[in-house]
Amino acid sequence: MEKVTKAVIPAAGFGTRFFPITKAMPKEMVPVVDKPVIQYVVEEAVASGCDDILIITGRNKRAIEDHFDVSAELNMHLQNSGNTELLEASERLSDLANIHYIRQKEQRGLGDAVLCAKQHVGDEPFAVLLGDTICLPDTGEKPCTAQLADMLVKYQQPVIGVEVVPEHKIKDYGIIDGKLIEDRVYQIMDIIEKPSPEEAPSNIGAMGRYVLTSEIFEILEHTAPGRKGEIQLTDALAKYTDYLGVIAKSTRYDIGDIDTWIVSNLKLLMMDERYKNLVLQALEK
Ligand code: G1P
Image 1: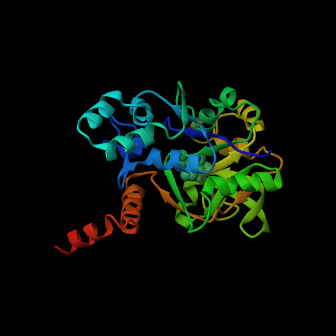
Image 2 (image 1 turned 135 degrees about the vertical axis):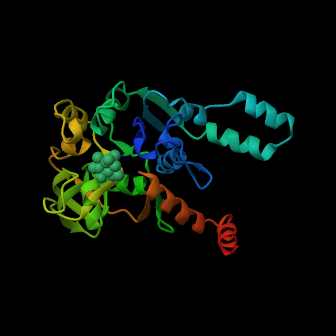
């Protein structure tokens, strides 16, 4: 297992936690500072060396395809009005990567969404990036997915990105039982989807980035519905023989619901030199 060039981005959920924003718009298109959340995710995959991206969509997700597609009408308008700066930005966006789409016909869970990628992925190792998480690498570090892919190459084992989870959030994560084998690297013995704090084997949880091997597809095909009656990726991961949890050198911004989206937006706005002063000035008034 050498290079990871394929990425799968599950984006089929209804986005009920964002209602009414998501009544007519996919939750992956919710803006964070000045671009939709899914653009950050695709950019991370590309910056991590994945030039083949498969987005698992569902009904009402056309806007995602349009976002990454060429808009001939818009480009023509920008060209005619001499707006070369925006024209270049529009062309950069549609040239970002080779993006493919598959529809998950029924919402049967994250595991089922990943299983939709089986044929496209084939036998190669591949990355999975959840569409409701933005990861920004620490200064001077590679993107989070690239850090995990390096660990797959080093240990020849699948890798789950993990982070320390506050106690009240344990119930929202896949939580690992692992043994530290190197700074930031755990050999995982077990992983449990959304346990109560009492049942949880640790406070270290999956944070939405994975680099997996194609064996996961066969495991998923034999994984029964778990929590919420859905096929859980976590239940399939638990059946891997040897796999790692890695705390990447990056910061995660959760866009999973309205509260975390607002907080993440504020944090990212305050880190952005273009907008920071605007926000501070507005608050002073
Ligand atoms: C999913 C996974 C969970 C993981 C989490 C990270 O849950 O099932 O194991 O810890 O993403 O965000 P979701 O947030 O989609 O409910």
